[in-house]
Image (tube, rainbow, N blue to C red):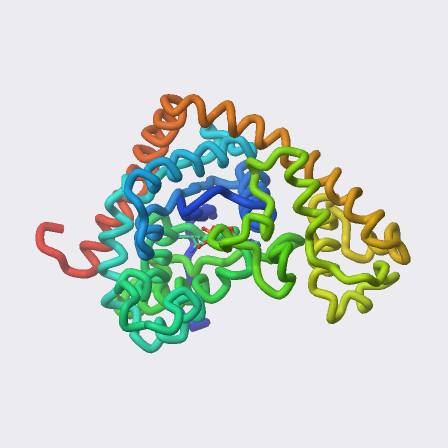
Length: 342
Ligand code: AMP
Ligand code: TRP
């Protein structure tokens, strides 16, 4: 691999979020907060991935409403449509087209290793949609249609990003085009890459958890946030003095991690302050921090949700700008593959 020329185009950031429900603190810390920071240093595209959403059954009216809601959450969290391109995946046909071409590059064996498919398909794999199996190939197409080099995501997307790199590398070799696609790098590290459920510190906080008490939504008001944190499952011991003491205490470790991520300090610094203190002291302090971070976003979200015309204008403009970046990439891809007329 080292003797082949590598990609030497410009850096570009791409990430996607599924419109499958309201965003929560895990999405905020694992993804959105990083998006907002990156828009100041990089060319960025942030995509609402509705094609991915339909790999599981969706009600059409709800899907359309959720798509606007995610766009509103992007803006409320601080994304600026003059800096970053915000758009909907299905509005740019390059995603589906490139996914098909990548279907013929990716190998069954690669996809069969994907743990998210195993989790989402559950016991009855025969009944899962073909799209659910193919999900990570579409994700590779999302990223590479723009030759994106960096992808901010939570920890759960690590394996999918490795697959994107494998697809890019294989395509480049298969079509004798070394360095055509970049091998995209995940940006995962940092506090908040894996926020866990408030009800079970061994499972990730998720939009699809049936219990609303398991997560803090960007839309929750101060009182709801405080109540959810008060009810979060922990244990009767006081907080330890050092990070080692969090081993085997997933609920406590999760709350300390959330505090650290929001305060911009390390877990150890949180314990320097709260070590030896009980949850009766720590939980209210954490609730204050979460409320301070989320309630301004929640208020802005409510304002934007009442202005769908503005959201649609942002998405329309974003789709046009995204198409303009993908078009020359797709023209080159068609030519490399040997499609007629290119
Ligand atoms: P999704 O809601 O699955 O579309 O995820 C959108 C983004 O949020 C992706 O980058 C995920 O990796 C990230 N994310 C989702 N859940 C969590 C979590 N519990 N902790 C950290 N990041 C998360
Ligand atoms: N699979 C991602 C998730 O569930 C969403 C996604 C789709 C994505 N396409 C992407 C993330 C491209 C990063 C880059 O969170």
